[in-house]
Image (tube, rainbow, N blue to C red):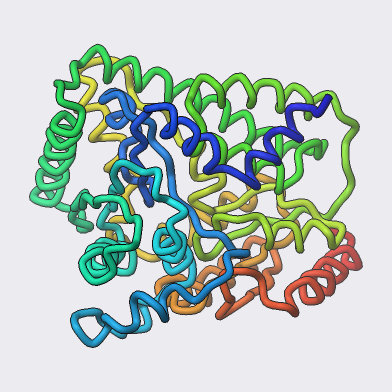
Length: 387
């Protein structure tokens, strides 16, 4: 019988199947793209939340077929609006792989993501044969001031009202408090993942850790927590592994191909700064007081607000030190100018902390052909230095 970790890895390969089966059985599934969308509200409304991601093995140029013909009619051609990981999600939508969604919620966290809504709606109008979910924009301001905070608070209340309309019933505070408690229980498992992968005795690989993190975003909560408990118990019973300890950061990577390339080079990814990784193991939502206000405060703390670059750079370098990384791999997708702009400062911060960095710039969504060789050479240099 396959173990729990094998089950998690299989779910990673077919993560949408669980939600699709639920939809076929009558459960309404709400898709979302960004970690700033409050899953708890979706659950409290009686829907199944399901986070979207790309697929590096998807075949077909769906942008050329459905988006490029519409570009002269309203889409910006700016490089920063054409980002690899965002295009990968849009391709799956256009391919009909998310036809089981009842709605798609898009948070306004960067222009390239926000444009998905415009592209989906335009494609729906011009290509009626496409099976595309209806979209909803969860708007938000990204500056740090009182007015922005009030605007974002109002947007969460508006999202609650929209969910109530879709569900045909009100979301009562008891249901929301229960959903918050359940998600807090999920976060406890994710913090256990983060601690286990960063432990001195390496018993959980980076691929396995990312697979568990992904399952938290693509499985019903009760099923995930039971599977995560079994998988982590299984990992803790293993013998320790050897490998150079690496930290992974850069663009939002939602697959494990790069981690696989790293770990085939006698290394283990023991920590990361990825939205699909350690970032999911954030602190709990408070359970005292008004649940909607607690929810608003929590997700406001996760938002990519305008702040000094030094704060972001220092946070990532500190995370790499905390997990005992001997080196860092920084992978940035083509078009992700936000991350490209940060990289010189981030590399300098790692070097100041005694952590050498390998910078993989202008990467395709799936790792470039030369990545395994470059990673092997980087790992060999660290191993030769006795790290």
